[in-house]
Length: 72
Image (cartoon, rainbow, N blue to C red):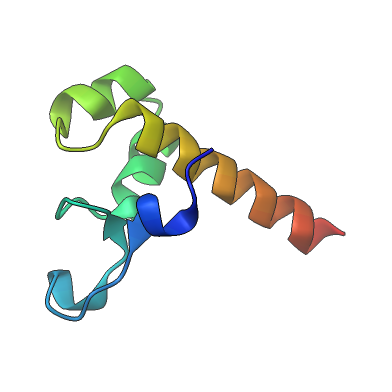
């Protein structure tokens, strides 16, 4: 898995500090919204080609880990 600094970051100069995928202006929340809406990961990647599959999967793994920590 990619380390967090390689996946998502915040910069006040990019979308007012909204967490985005590194190297893009794509909000991390967009991935969650796509999946929540029933869209497959491949559709997200097609619509946001600046986000790599590796970044998207790493972001989902980070979210899963956060849920496990919160539930513990």
